[in-house]
Image 1 (cartoon, rainbow, N blue to C red):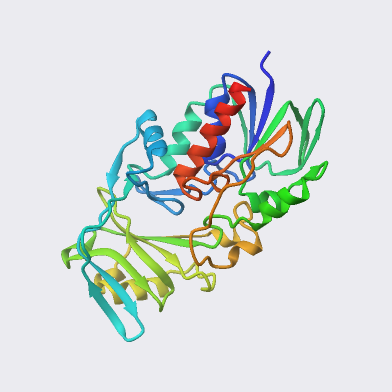
Image 2: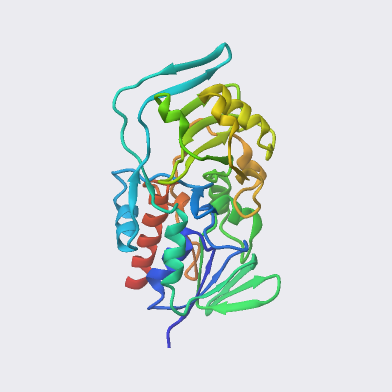
Length: 338
C-alpha cells in the first residue's frame, strides 16, 4: 500500500507535486480557497480568458516551457510593437525603444496550466475551502488539523508562501527558530500587488502605433500592458503599491484615456483583484513595496515528515512560474529517490 501524503495548497506548485508524486503516494490536496490555482487567477468572459495573476513566460525558462509542451498547451508572443507611454506629472510622453527581449503568454491564460494538471490527477483527493490550522508531527507521521477534521499521513508538504505559512499555521513541535525567522523575512511574490483587466472590442491603441505598455507616477496604475487575446482587445495594469483599494473602474478608465485616447472610454469588462488583501496570499507585512526582486531560496526540510515547497523556496527564478516548477520538480525527485 502506498504511503499517505498531504499537500497544503493547490496552486501550480501543489498541483504539480501531486501530479509528479501520485504514483508513489496516496495524496490529499488541501486548499483554503474555493478554487484551485493559488496566485494563478484566470477570469473568463464571453469565451475569452484573461490573467489577474502571473502572465508571462520568458525564453530562458526551460522548465515551465517543457511543462507547457507536456500538457499540450501553446505559447504566443506578447504584443510589444510600437511606442510606450510615460504618464509624467507634466503630461503623457511617448518613446520608442530598441528591440525588446520577447516574452510569451499561454493561449487561454495561465489558468490552463493548473486546470490541465488537475485533469491529470487520477485518485488525488482535492478538498477546497479547507484551510489548514495546525500541523503536528511525531516519529510515525503527521496530523493535519483543518476547521473540521484531523487528517493523518506519513508526510506533509506545505506549498504556501513561506511568510503566509509561518504566520497562519501552527506547528507542533514548533519550527526551529532560525527557520521561522527566515520564513517571515521572505516577501510573498505578488503579495504587494493589485491588478486589473480592462477589455475592448479591439486593441485600438495599436492603430495609433502604441504598444499598450505604459508607466506612470500619477496613477492609479503604475504599469499598463497589452493583454489582448486573438479575438478581444485588452489592457492590464498594476496599481501603485501605495494606492487605495480601488475596485471601481472610473479612475482607471480616466488614466487609460489619458494614455491611449478617447476610445478607452468604450470598455466592455473591468475585473480587479487585490492580492494584498487576499488572506490566502499575503499577510500585512507583504504590503510594503519592494525596491527590487527579492533574493529567494530557503531550506525546505522542516523535519523528516514536513517539507516546504513553492516559488519563493527556489533560489533559481524564485517568484516566477518557472521557480514554482523548479521547486516542485526538485522536491518530487528527492522524495522519490528517498
